[in-house]
Image (tube, rainbow, N blue to C red):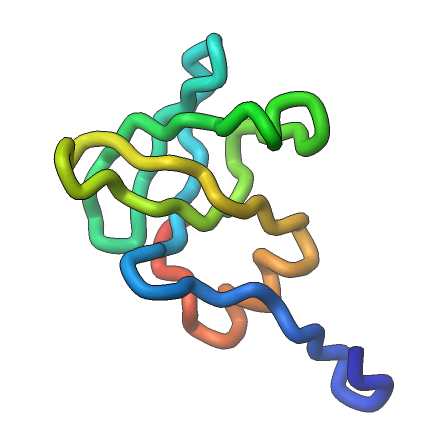
Amino acid sequence: MSEESGRRNLRMPAEGEQFALVTDMQGYGRVRLRCNDGKERMGRIPGRMRKRIWIREGDVVLVDPWDWENGKADIVWRYDQQDADQLREEGHINVG
């Protein structure tokens, strides 16, 4: 983290990934997402994240949409509030 600017280096989307906002918790590791491309998707929290990283409504996440089923995506990363605010200020997120 740069001491003068306060900017942190954050994980940015790789090929095919995009930002999304968690709009609703469905249960059983599933969430409703509003993605950066304007589509609503059902998101799946993978097992490696379920007990280690808690995801709540209003969180900004990084998702990998499924190629074979357009309405679903896997959650890859969760940003904390400070990181989400930084992404909004820099203009990377247009949801939420």
